[in-house]
Amino acid sequence: MTAHAVRLELRDRAEAAAGTLGHLAASLLIGVAGLAVLVVALVGAALSIVWVGLPLLQLALAAARWLAGAERRDVNRFLDAHVPPLPRLGRRPDGRWRRVTESLADPWQHRVLALMALRAPLTLAAL
Image (cartoon, helix red, strand yellow):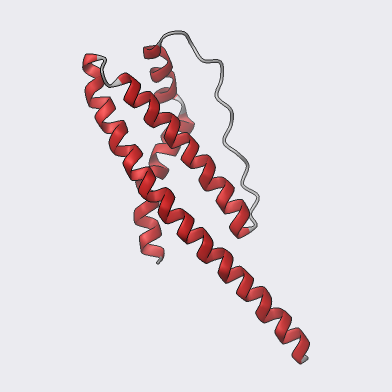
């Protein structure tokens, strides 16, 4: 292997390492925000019994979905992966209660909430 080839390989490895570190930093920020969103979702779910928590729950579900999209974009950018975006939501039903129940019944939303719960601990473990 020539010296030039070794330099090119080292440069490629350094770029890959920089991408990995960038992804870990972005994941840590998304994980902390995800934990905050999860707390808001739990408070909203607890307060939804008296209808006060429905706007909080709706906001938390939308924020969790946005954070999951940001995570996918970061993975694609930093790690040069090809993760597709989240599927679009279907037609939104009328009424706040129905919108929240439709969001909670969506299997993608379950995955997004699980991502929010696991992102920060897994990122800290990776560091």
